[in-house]
Length: 93
Image (tube, rainbow, N blue to C red):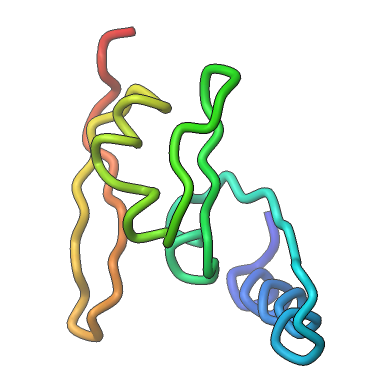
């Protein structure tokens, strides 16, 4: 895993082709909080199918997380208005 600062810098760098030239950039992230913080759109894949598609704050809902990853989580909003996912416990498979 990269240092937090380097991770954010690389994600920012990867967004430039989209911002500057209108190109589509696809990145596979397994860190849901990074997806919430950086992505414009999230495709959630689980059980061999598309589980959700949309803005990260809607595609990564608690229902989707429970269905795809079998985890009970909590969504919290920071003082700046950003959303973060806090894991609680695994759900029975």
